[in-house]
Length: 294
Image (cartoon, rainbow, N blue to C red; front, side, top):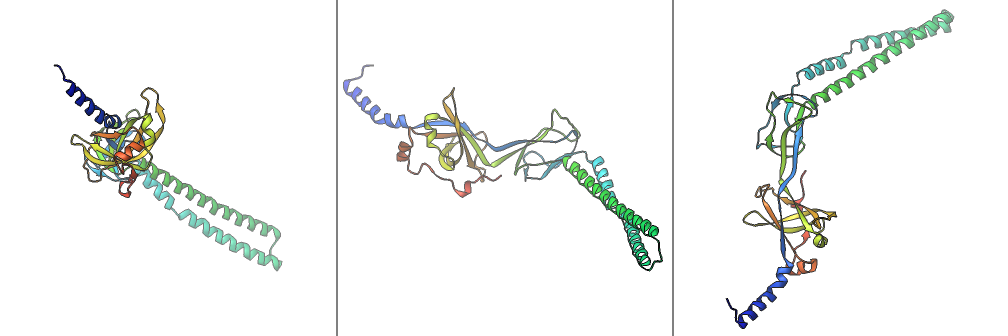
């Protein structure tokens, strides 16, 4: 195919006009992730006794998702509760102290009238001090029993598997009745999807355009749905192999319009000045509605 001189000139003019735009704009892509993705594990070994959730359930922070066998711990807790509430010995010791205190008062009155000996006074004072020590010892024993009850209560809580975040159960790894070992303690996966996370590898020479707290336009999914992301972190460390910097953003997904795993595109320009002149308001301050809920 032979091009005429006029055609060559026309092609050259088109290339000249389009080349600045082509040089300025480029897209980089990444995949959207859950804002938090947590494998919830037990803190000790045991048999999985129950599960309160199924895959797809929405859970709240602190909610009990399941738990290990608690029978022995609950029995110990009941014993510890009765022990810390036992007051019979304390009441008896306090009555003995009251008796010895009153007896000492009477002996001292008799001493003043010279109707009692110093030996009787010394013996009564000793008995009163012993009664005081007995009351103190029983109170200390009850404090230890109260601490034992608190410790057993904590052991019971350790048997429970609680959600660390508000989110959704996306996978259950163990069945009821299965033994949870130290080498495989993960039971449930909980993810946070009302806010999503995307991380781009931005060319190092363009990293200065991005600042934490600003919002940038993004395109998501096969239909390139427009939204904005809030910049959370721009890494100060450059990857020497790829000459890129990690850029972390969050995306509001309170309406559930996006899915984890969707493709996400970020448009770059050659400089911040070119970018802002080509697209006014490209960077804006983060909106309150885009704040991350933990």
